[in-house]
Image (tube, rainbow over all chains, first blue to last red):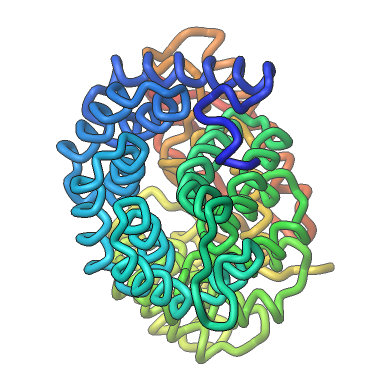
Amino acid sequence: MDADKKSGIRQFKGKQVKLYKQISIEIEKEIQIHPNYADLHNQFGLLLMVEGDSEGAESHFLEALSLNSKYREANLNLGFLYIEMKRWKEAEDIFLSEGRRYPKDGFLHHTLGVLYFQTERQKEALVHIRKAIQCHPYYRDYYRKRGVWHRGKVHLDQKRERVFKKIHLNYHYAQFHNFIGLYLAKKGKSIQAVRELKKAAKLKPDEFLFHANLGTVYYYQGAYRKAIQEYKKALEIDPLFGMGYANLSYTYGLINRTREALRYMERAVRLNPHYADLHYNLALLYSDRKRYEKAISELKKALRINSNYLFARINLGVLYEEQKKWNKARREYRKILEITPDNEDVRRRLERIS
Amino acid sequence: MLREDFVIQTNIRRILIRSNIDYSEITFGTVRGVVYIQGTFKVSGISTDGGSRDTEDIVTKTLRSLELKIRGIPGVVDVKFQLLNWKKEKGQWMPTKKVE
């Protein structure tokens, strides 16, 4: 989609317009039921922005931010809206403050570069374009392909400048398609969801979330190899995306590739050490490979995080039992019965070893 | 027979995700092929005012289907439901209190 050719919802085809309008009506109804959901206001703002209703979009982004002042996505959407409305100062304030919070986000530098070009502040624009290139190789390639970056310098003739000034719209449309994709996925329309999420990822290929979402929709569809591919793309972009490793691990589990599942679950746990469920899953993987000491250690970690994690305690009891550590096994079973006295299965296990 | 608890666990996760079950209040674990399902059982989109015959039928069917699917996972030797709002007695599912 060339963002510079047409603007707003006019660029979409008949079927798409119908779908987006229908979603817009549904979100509006949901807002009436849940007026204090920041997410809904942000989503509705996005839809209104695509429909070309800038004032309406602004009021919903502002509402989302008044409900949650740290809502980054709503803040960025508002910033892009201000660029569209040529309210440069307000846009600049938003992107500068976001840039201070996320100095390594290439897209923020790119956007600031665009903004300064628009306002004839060439020197500041060049500084940010260079920063964008330093942040991620994607930007160098992107500028090079469009002839904007050549031999270490920015080159902008009239035609390139026009294209360049509209590149930032990709972010906005990418967010839009991502939202529509997730909405459709929630409704069980996974084929359409994949189509939308692919559009999002094409418009902003360096956004890990779009690939992660695409991975999740493929996972829902049962297309596990495609899910793995997308999760891996997400992790290439953001290697600290802990849940991405967990999702990869679950997906490998489904195709019985437990060696890879173990490797990725270990990484997920390293990045999310306070998530009991991940320790539990890692314990299962160790236990399946007969690495019992490690399994016990992970189950204990899960229980330190959540002492009422019953399955972790049952697994621990069973592992102790198998190792003939009767006292320890009994202790775990008794603790379970303290929490759930009606647990007949555990009572029987306890009676068997008492 | 394959009996890897992690693989069973990922299959249960997939079954729940792809079903009409509202699994927000469900937890599950696997111990040597024995699957435990705990929590409050709900079906997405079913009215929460509860207790009607139709609602009970839908939940009962969903529970039966879930149990069958889980038992169909290679390596599963038993499924133990420890639900707060439904119990199985003499092979029949029945609510222990109003369906929430």
